[in-house]
Image 1 (tube, rainbow, N blue to C red):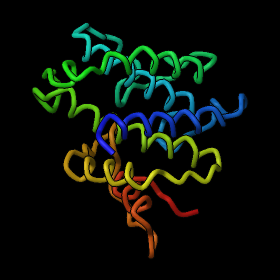
Image 2: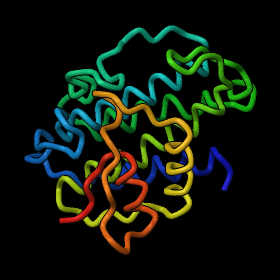
Image 3: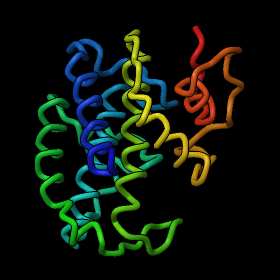
Image 4: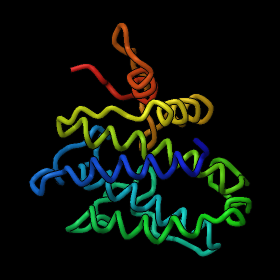
Length: 191
């Protein structure tokens, strides 16, 4: 699976988990410290809007959904599924081969081709799919190929500080790659 296929699959899996959230669960705590389920949705929506801005060369100054933002829920609004789907529908068509080849300046990373950001955002979406589903008691089995993409990205790029990733935790004995990846990102996967 190439990067854009993986990106689409990660988005589909996120959409499925988001669509399963009941109305009374949006303000429940998520697996992301300080964020509710609606906050996580707002952060992922922000990522779609940021990707569109990078792809089109426009300025997207809204930082409410950026990593570490205090209340990304504001971006998700009262219907996070509809807002997510609209943000995705607006973003994906802008990710043309020409746009993906252009470089963009990323704070803390530097100048990178937008194609590299597809991998970062894929890893983000994969992780947050689990963050929402697990917090709500869903048995989230992430796509093994996407787990590998996310884990590889994380081992090369993880930022451990508040608002990003917490300290690595020891995975339970006999853990599969999904649990090892999530533990590396500071998630406690055992019950």
